Length: 239
Image 1 (cartoon, rainbow, N blue to C red):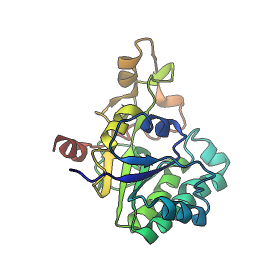
Image 2: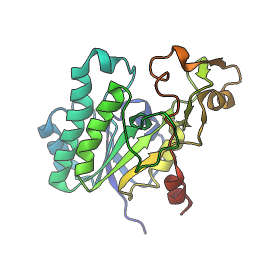
Image 3: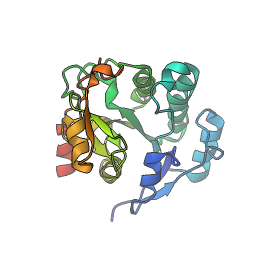
């Protein structure tokens, strides 16, 4: 019989955390509130880990959208995504607790696409830099797994989608199913769907979505193809 994991999920009240709560699993999962576990206070993290003694932390807490906020308030971005993640790692180290960190596909240069885990990275905006800052701390802790994820909500929330931008979009509920199959892995892993344009992905979910060009978008104008190679993920799932 497989040993049950005791898992703490930070940021459990967020979009993806809410989906995780609905997944049926034999693992014991805790979803602490910010009051119970504050990632900006290392003492708070240590107390929670001491009390519940998890063997895995799934670190979701941080600042994501809107991406412009990472330009307008870099202090908040740095505190939540870099310092907060560093605190998680420092606390986890005390208990030898594994850290699974959700990063982003946007840390890749975004020019040619099909990036593998070992390819060079070059974040295109402050959001991606902040996630890479978190990665730096996690990389230093060997009992960890970094997931470079490309996910979105279902249904596709936008009325328009870029026809000339390629990504690996996959719905959050599918990521949630994959997550419990890769808990034992370590290192870095690209996680997403098949490479396609955002428009083609959205069209499958919403036949009324309209085409739009990246030419007027500040981010995707510089980053037309942040798609990832997910062959490593496919091999793991197949096994």
